[in-house]
Structures are given as structure tokens and as C-alpha cells.
Image 1 (cartoon, rainbow, N blue to C red):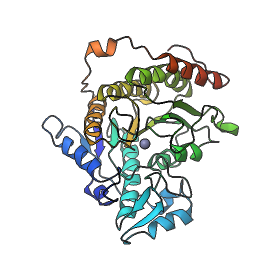
Image 2: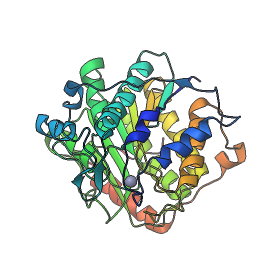
Image 3: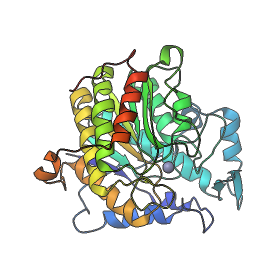
Length: 350
Ligand SMILES: [Zn+2]
């Protein structure tokens, strides 16, 4: 497989205060890992570009884009109590969007099979008119709308496995049946959205699928949720492109979360997403980095995902064959999601 990666030193120039978990060290450890012997030279470098104002305004209001633009060259500003800017943040944010857009272009052109945009700042909390939760522009939401506008796609699946609910992405497509937004997240927790009953509105009814989790869920729980909820819905929705808001703050030692996912778990979830992409859209899938604040976990988890994307799995046959059992609390979550969505989708074993 030809797997693209977006990496660029300019993403490190979005500087946040020393105490801030979303800092440049996150990408430094990931980029360092890419230079290790068994990783170097194995990926196609996708060179990011600055997204244009028009592209960013596919999701964001002109007023908000201007507000972020006005932070350029200012030593420090805050878009909300968690969301800081430095002189080069606006450039980094435009380049983060552009990294996702370039990945989409190259995957759709079949120049590469799949791609992982290793970018920051992250995006999924950014709303049309405001930045929040460490996010400036909504990289994945802009990517989804760009794929619709530029590539005339009609069905995009967005999978958001970040610890947090992607309120910005959900809101961008809440009444739009062309983008199916699926999210697993700790709940109740920041940002407060993502309850069972948030299922979309109007024509978008059923095209928002939230799986709120209490905390403590691990690999086998996530695998069961993906197999029993995401997979059957995806095979009925038939996406033409899959976008992944890949946050690694569900890692078992993440400082912000209380989930128990391991690098092998991320590898297995990636394998399931690849299967969904293979069965629907010639394997077209683009990952974009969201959260993840334990540096060792970030490095090992991204590495495990990249190996799966390349078809160079770290999973043994035995690990793939293990009969996973979810906890009873997760079984009841799965039942509840299926119940809320039974008017829209069939939950058969596929
Ligand atoms: Zn997060």
C-alpha cells in the first residue's frame, strides 16, 4: 500500500504556553518516530499547502476567519480560555487544513491509497463562528465539505474516535445527510455535547451517531462498538470517502482521559476502518490528528495506525482472531444506540 503522511515543521510554530497539553512536543515525538529505522522512507510525503480563505469558509464564517487572521504576528492571544495563538498560529492552522485537503486530493486521484495528516492545531471542536478546545479551524469538517464541493462526492463518513465529542463537526453537518458523523467519546465530559439523542435534524436525521461512554472502556469495548454499530451503518450508508478524526487521548495513560485503549487497540480499530473503506470506496481513507497528550502513547499509537495503513500490520493472526467480549455496560450502550437509530439503520451482523 502507498500511504501518505503530512508532516511539516511549520506545525510546530503554533506555540502554546508551557503548561498546555496541546503543544509542539506532540508532533516532535511523532516526527521523530517517523525517522526510526523501521519507519523511515516507507511513506509518501504529502506536501501541505495553505488552505485558501474560500476553502476555510466552507465551514467557518468570514468574520471568524478574519478574527483568526488578525492574531498573526501578535505575541499571544486567546480565542477561548483553552485556545491560544502565537504569531504563526494562523499560518499553522491554514496549513493544517491544507494538509487534510491535499491528502484528500491525492487519495481521490489514486496517487496514494490512504493518508495520515499529522497536523496541529487540531480541529474537531472548532465551530463555524468560534475556536475552542485547542482547535482553530475544523480540519476534518472543511475536508468533508471540500470533498463534496471539489470532488462532487455525495456521501462522506466521518469517524471521530477522539476522547472528546467533536461538537464542531457534528454541528457543521447536523442537518446534512451527505456527511455521516460517528463519534465515540467520554460523556458527560468536555465539551458537553454528544448524547444518545443527538441524531441529526431534518434530512440529516440518523446521520449523526453518538456513542457516549462513561470512562474506563478499553480495546475490546471499542472493537465491539465499531463492529456492532459503525460497521452495519457504514455498509448501508456506502461512503465514497472515509475521514477519521484520530485523537489518541483515549490511550490508557492519557492525562486528560480515563479510557483504556492501547496501541494494539488503535491498530485493530484501524483494521476495521480499512475494511469499511475497502468494501465501500476502494479503501479511500484519510486520517487527521486530533488530541492525544501522553507523548509515549501518541508515538506508539500513531505508529501502530500507520503500520496498518501501510498493510504492514503489527497484529498477529492470534490477536486478530481473539474473541473479544465487551463489558455489560458497553453492551447496554450499544443496545441504546441501536434503539435510538433503529428507524434509520438495520443492525444486523455483517
Ligand atoms: Zn480530545
